[in-house]
Length: 381
Image 1 (tube, helix red, strand yellow):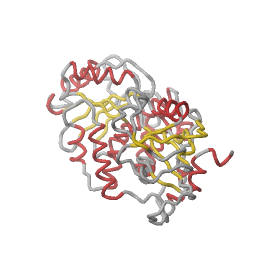
Image 2 (cartoon, helix red, strand yellow; image 1 turned 45 degrees about the vertical axis):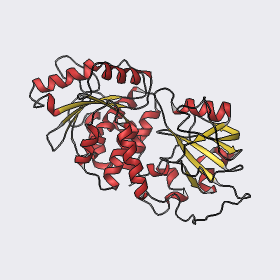
Image 3 (tube, helix red, strand yellow; image 1 turned 180 degrees about the vertical axis):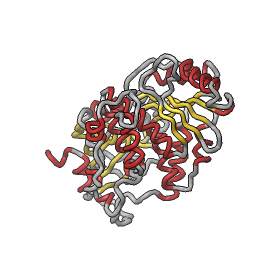
Image 4 (cartoon, one colour; image 1 turned 135 degrees about the vertical axis):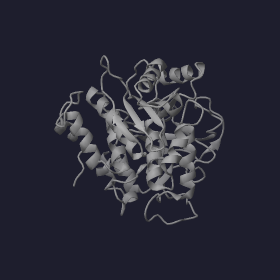
């Protein structure tokens, strides 16, 4: 069966709303997800598509997709309403662990809405009052964030100021999907996931990043299927690279790319960035905006040199600077690494296209010329 895109699925399902019944669009969408979106790679495709679209229908779908992700993590999931209504608890999701622990989920997509801790805390207290949760020791609230924005930093500050560490957590959708990918592909079980979601501190992302690094050291899928291990890096040979750029609370990925690649025409690697010692003048590099797609490419104009550039966030973490030339940005028209495109890439030959694929974009890596041209608009210019 050829997997439909989220757009095609929603067109068939109809307008998502809070109407009830087995044949309501909401119920049909939930059943479709349960029946057909059974691999974490498929779910990542749908979630990323829902974030890219600025539309109320996709925001509702994003909420449902986040809840479906909860089932991948081993929780029993109760889907919440899309809109609040009097006399009903307005949570977005209620996840129940086999261990007896509960998570009340508040989903925030790419739009900026005021976020108040009192709202989620009230949902938790109402569920306790109605005996759906045993006590306040058996529950936490988690905010799942589609894309960081200033409201998220304010939310984190509020959690700190109100000393709500034991009650409220924040996690990006990319980190939450990464947990599902780790659970799916490695020896990570539901209890491990629960222990990551419950530690002190308002943000979960650093814990997830540690797990990703540990998993990558144990051996993720190879960068390309047939690239030989060459110790040489000859001056005349052009190498092709893909590097991810993640959103930060102070500056999102597109702003970083626009500033560094487009305006200042340089980029920076950390001490341990893969390829840091190999990338050189004349190489080609493309930039993957996490959760979106390839949004820029350029020619490398120098080998990395250690220096401090204050234009970089956390310059001490990214001291290896290399210049760029001929940058091309297409932030509003990204190249989406969907199943159709993956089927054409050398890196995915012989792989199940529905399974985990984020390994391809989670760290800097060398790719083939063929893949580079497909991933950038070099193939049409």
